[in-house]
Image 1 (cartoon, helix red, strand yellow):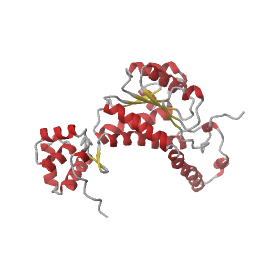
Image 2: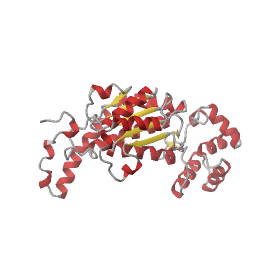
Image 3: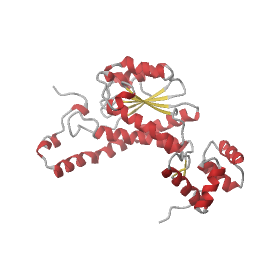
Length: 303
């Protein structure tokens, strides 16, 4: 019997992949992956609406919470965990929830994805409310855990997004304010949604958080000016950004960052306005945290 879920159907183009040599496997997989970006691109409008929902949540003091099982859950946790070092956010601002709990990040917890009550309980445990957005990730479009999470999130007043790579049934759609559906077609290996569906999911998560962070002022041009300099690489990046924008030396940038408490945005405003850290912070707050509203455009990109 043919499974209606696209992610569970057999792919005729890879039916003989078990006979391929290593180079042939690479070609088959890459040929399938070429369509992933197009599938995501087909969802431009709902992705943009999702970004707007997340931006509104952030501006209102709310959160983005991802909920998923297996690969989908892990990708949500991955995206959430990358926001603090990239954008200087509080770890509670973007939260990744995986069926089975954090142990499921490394060890599969069988049956957890089949429990809608578990998804609902996770929303209660995280005190989801009207200020929040919950993005349920279900590659197949049918994961009961995700359905339970979205239904409870909706009941608690949150806005909801469904991200799926197979057209979901109406029972799932009914719990989502926005449905993002990059249908990538049958997987290289039947049902292995860690492949094309996983790639599409990562692309959409990248867009949701990056887009919302840009909108709330976490960048200046395409420079990440709200990063947390928590290691040598990020400290180096912070100094390079300040030096590039201000036209000063690396030493000047280091001193300016020290005076700004390590905050790149604050350092840039201090330099531009010739003010101290407190005045720079006040100017940023008045501008809603958007550096572009305080400073002129950043220097052009060198050819």
